[in-house]
Image 1: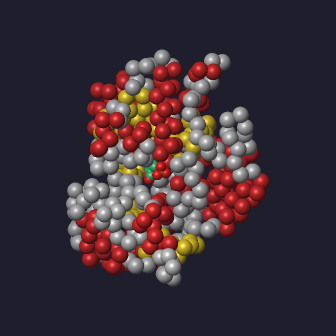
Image 2: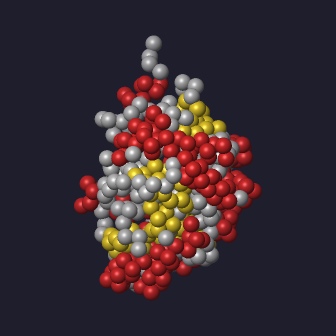
Image 3: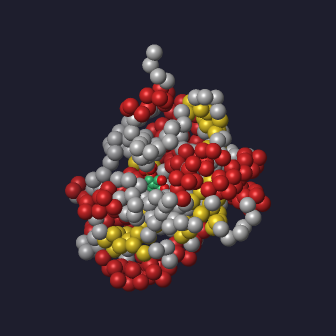
Length: 421
Ligand SMILES: Cc1ncc(COP(=O)(O)O)c(C=O)c1O
């Protein structure tokens, strides 16, 4: 008789961001409901990282499940070139109404990385089309992460993820997330800059590091002064995670392009949207077919994805998801403070529903504290799924998480930190 499927994984699967030479045994997940994952051995684990920050309302949300089933039975997928359909049109309308002002055009793609590729290509091309061909440079922030495709890698911080691809990546200059540093960088390079890209309010993969509202505002002002586009990557922060529907709202700015994915479908299906200003769209509208935006994916505007995104937006509005995340973050944070009085040995911060504690270390993804934290998670948080980023332990659970479940997350985080310090 063959081994169970989870034991056969090691023979055939190659997992993302996994060192197969040292990695621990995988969790065999057989189901998920609400905030909880169900494992093959009957155990349950609270999904305190929302399955890579995607699961917005909770797993298996009935309204989202129903939207998928209904749409699949009506129109599953049709090419989005030369065809259109109601879920895509309604979703683009809803996104334009909900997003920061002026983002009236939606280009659909598949995931966070492709949402970023679309933004970068469109901004670069739009600058060239208005005659500014010298704008061949992108500006980004140190610590930024925007995905793993080539354009997204180029604007991401190369250390440690993309160093080996350096010779293949286009030129990008970077400043720390600091208004004065950004000002100096743009003074030097602004005239050659096509676009500046950043994750507003919080950089996810960098270890949930702050990008303060004044930095986001400075980026907006500097882009205006130097004629560059501003791209906000809200792939992680979108749809309430930081306590406002979009993180840009906390800085009171509108970008020229906004990248959304993950929570867009409530985390149920891969779909992304890059929202643009009308003026970027107009740079491509012409009677010359050679000036179209030469970009598209097989599943652009996927009908089932758009339908579940519409259902997710309904839930965001009905439940006031940003307020829920704010309450969840406040509760986890308060309980953690009570369990682990602040003795200065760990840094703490919170962005809406995201609660972060950082051990001393170089802060990098490969920090030596990382394996220690991971081992402590296995031993001291057997019922809560936590996934440290280097020396950073954080929680970012779905919006259905109850106050009691928040307490459980905090208790497990405190136990992990006590063991790993
Ligand atoms: C801010 C940000 N941008 C882009 C991405 C890439 O998204 P995906 O993994 O869906 O390609 C991520 C993924 O974590 C992200 O956090």
